Length: 126
Ligand SMILES: [Zn+2]
Image (cartoon, rainbow, N blue to C red; front, side, top):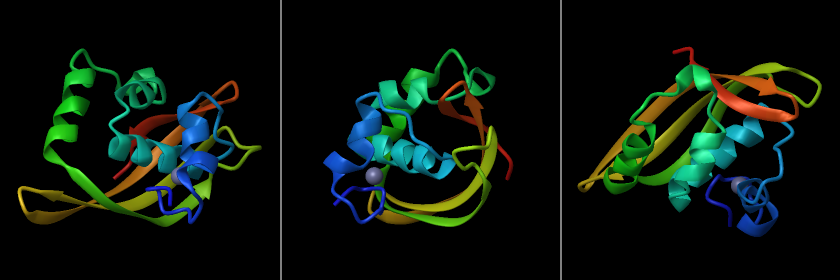
C-alpha cells in the first residue's frame, strides 16, 4: 500500500508523481510529498516546494528529517479549493512520526499554488 494512505499501491499512486507526473490536486501533491518523506526522496521535495519557501540549507534540513523522523501515518483533516481547475488551495493534515522511540504529531495547514500545470507547496498558514 502507498504510504500516503490512499489505499492504492505505491506504483499506481505517488510513484507516478515521483517519476514526474503532475498531481491534479493540492491534496495529491500533499500526499505525494508526505510519501517522499517516507521514501527519502529529497529531490522530489525540493522540486515541489515554491521558491517562496526556499532557503540555502533546504537539502540538508530535509536530509536531517530523514535521519530523525520515521513517518508513520498521514491523515487529511480538511481542505479547500486545490482541485484541478483551481490555482490555489489549502490542505490541513496530521502526520504522525516516531523519533527515538517516542511518537509525535505534526499538524499543519498548508497553502498550495499552481505554477502552470504543477502544484507547489507554497507556505504554512498555521
Ligand atoms: Zn500515494
